[in-house]
Image 1 (cartoon, rainbow, N blue to C red):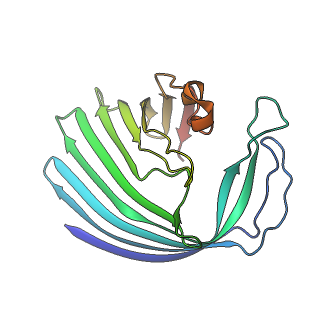
Image 2 (image 1 turned 90 degrees about the horizontal axis):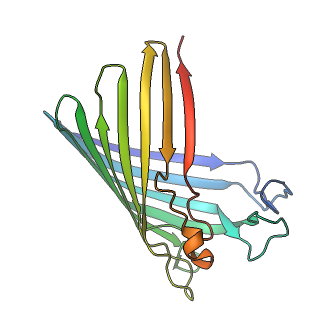
Amino acid sequence: MVAVWASTFELIGEEKKLASKVGTSALRALGPPETNRSYELGADYEQGRWSASAMLFRNDVRNLVETVRQPSCDVRGRVCLEYENLSRARLQGLELTAGVNISRKWRLDTNYTYLDARDLTNDERLADRSRYRANATLGWTPTEQLGTRVRVEYIGEQYRSAILEERPAYTLLHWYVDYEVHRNLSLHAGIENLTDKRLANDDASIYGRADEGRRYFIGLTASF
């Protein structure tokens, strides 16, 4: 078992910016840059086929940049966003992982995250962040060159505001495949949101910023 403690300080951005609408930029400085002091304390365990880890984390943020969806947009079919600053925020929680080699060709990995995100200026929860998230990935490696995996992702209820009900939880399904052409070249492909879950179609007023529909991608990795 290995225990790890880490403390870091991060300066983000040279200026705060405001975007008037998606696809175009209208930028202006909003004050000092976002700063983040982060702490992590974790432990890892690995024995035979099994592995597990636990990590406590905390981020103390000043001038946090928050994305705010506007109630209307003058660009048809687009979502207009604005970026604003929160003077003080704290994001802390726990991340747990576990994995097992089911056989020589099959592996299961799981992950769970608890997040407590608060605006310390008014002591309220930060909007659009799930307290609970989890995922499970089942991987299959039929040959040394070919591997594929399916991932189930659970997104818990999301706080909106003191006067609005929380966004209900939902689950997404993803699929990926990797193929090693040779030791210096690999191909990657996948389908995210495999079931084409379109939450905004269920209730745009609640899920207006939810995950997009089904997405395809293909990639190439070369090393020299």
